Image 1: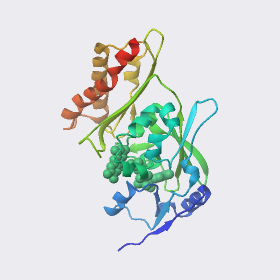
Image 2: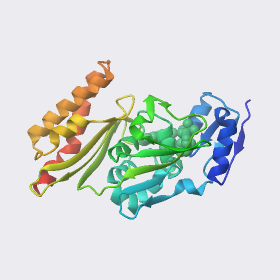
Image 3: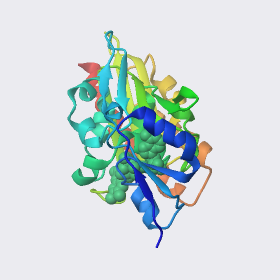
Image 4: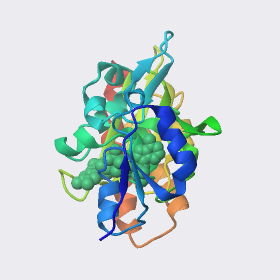
Length: 289
Ligand SMILES: Cc1cc2nc3c(=O)[nH]c(=O)nc-3n(C[C@H](O)[C@H](O)[C@H](O)COP(=O)(O)OP(=O)(O)OC[C@H]3O[C@@H](n4cnc5c(N)ncnc54)[C@H](O)[C@@H]3O)c2cc1C
């Protein structure tokens, strides 16, 4: 039997100081919904467990006075993402992803910081964070630094975080877009990790043309992707069925460019197009309103 020592600091400084001295020997524990699964499977045993759940400063959600930046603490649970009006109003795709995230029990424990730091390609909060051009603020004994979400992962389950790093907060470009959505496909309807996920936010001008759009693809690529080509295709145009079909084809093409032609592509190529169409078709009506 292996033993572990659990440390439960209440102050951020104490946690950072502990990681400075014992980082490579420590697992950071937030909600434990990924970490406990990994530890039970016998993966990477380390002697210390740093439980961050008592550090209140990791649980704050704030927007700055001019409403341009939303700060979400790494210890904010998916249940709070699901219930906070500030997140619903200023990051609606992130709010939506919390409805299909695992189960209520998991959402009560799972944190946004753990979801990102685990660096799983299928982390559901990642595409919504990417469309808000979010960045993680990371603390270590050397001070704090900011890592854009798109630079957070080197590959599947490989983040750029060092063992001494603690993710403190995420800074999102806050926006109340006219159109926004998150969609995912899993193996089953409930308690399913994503096989494919995507998030979009868009605005239109007074003639119904797309004036602003950000689109991100998750789960089916090793690292999260912002799909600039798809965004460019839609910008300045009034969405139509023809344009959406064209966008779906372009998205599938770009996905294959990233992943290569693996056996699963027979399923993924039509699936990514279907999911994209399901998400974007309502834009046709919205642009005509
Ligand atoms: C049954 C089940 C269903 C699930 N369904 C979904 C789903 O639908 N969608 C989805 O995206 N995920 C799902 N997950 C995965 C998991 O719940 C999420 O990834 C969750 O957000 C992880 O957060 P946590 O707080 O539990 O992290 P933990 O398990 O505590 O930590 C995860 C990793 O992040 C590191 N970490 C945590 N906090 C920090 C920090 N502040 N700084 C640096 N590193 C840190 C830990 O050391 C660990 O390596 C599911 C898991 C289970 C068991």
